[in-house]
Length: 319
Image 1 (tube, rainbow, N blue to C red):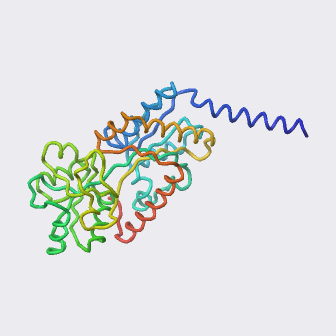
Image 2 (image 1 turned 120 degrees about the vertical axis):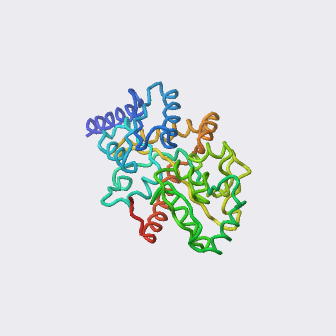
Image 3 (image 1 turned 45 degrees about the vertical axis):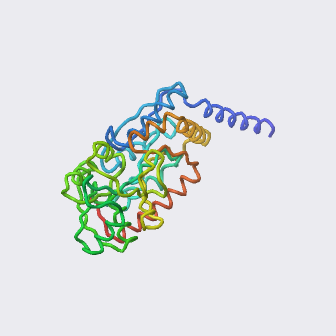
């Protein structure tokens, strides 16, 4: 009996030691979106920092398409050894399963949330010379002309679309949706005054803001952000508790050893805490987010419940 216990203990020790030696070879981070987008940029920043920390190459692999689900499926099929990670955006985790027909919700059945990586604020924008000066004026105009004020979004079922639906409910207004094929066309439409206002990811509108073609009416965040302290939140302007943010987070497959999951969480948090990381994220309109695993899991549950309710009530079906 003692010999059996000793053998079992030795296996446990070897397994734990092996996990703690991780990684001993290159690691890949899969991203379901094209290069240059905020999810891809976040993955590359994290990959660089983990490469420096581990002395092992961390490679970003883009498999775009199907609202992130191509990369999700590929990551699920990989060996659960910690050498294939997935950096996913909140829409593919908390919204896509409800708007895509026959979508497999891998994030319920197959993945472990490791760490929140970035918060990507949404903003309500208008042309720089627009008559609108703040959110209150938009609300007043929408109430005076129900259904006549147009707004752009990157497409049906996207985060900005859902944020606008929330805005309507919170303000008792009705504004008319004009979907575009992506954040850039949606932002350009507002800058060109084809549409008077639009919700969009901050990362997608920063170039037009910097060039003076767009101005921010309100942030869809709970509080102002350090990189743009003069931008007021929607909540500050008469819409209490209004918040809708997009985020990216790191996931691994169920079955990855607990020691590796814990090491990933610790090392990603250490990478995100480095001062230069905040500057790199800010350049793309994002904020590094050091959130422990428990809080991240709670965020996913909360956002999934809220987004499912919006999708069901509005009967949103993906294009």
